[in-house]
Image 1 (tube, rainbow, N blue to C red):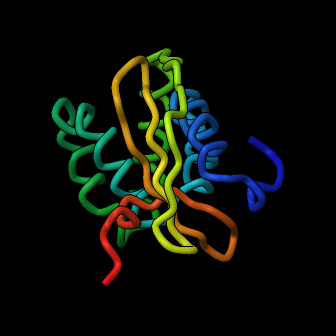
Image 2 (cartoon, rainbow, N blue to C red):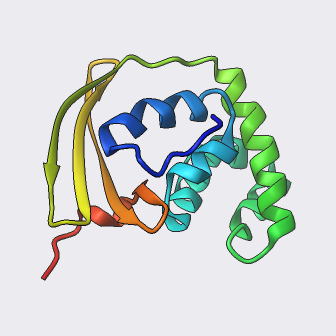
Length: 136
């Protein structure tokens, strides 16, 4: 997924995110997300491997503070995601603003309703699971 992503709108990022995710391209997935959201994504998608492999589970628990563990988890998870051979049908339903620096995109993934939250960062819009919280 080469090229500048800073000018992409949240609705455009969703398709890129799923394509990168299920191609095992975690470098691109990481570029589309805030660090906290990326770590949560690795933890979520790594759960299946962690249940089968105690060594992987131990590394998954250390990814925030251990760069070597993060690299190993990314490598294993990348292969696992690629092997799933998924290519979901994504349809954008709506985009709503939550202030100047947050947006919510409602979409369907293979007919299932979903939402992703985005925040405007220095590098452009990023998937940010925490951006769905209300701003006081």
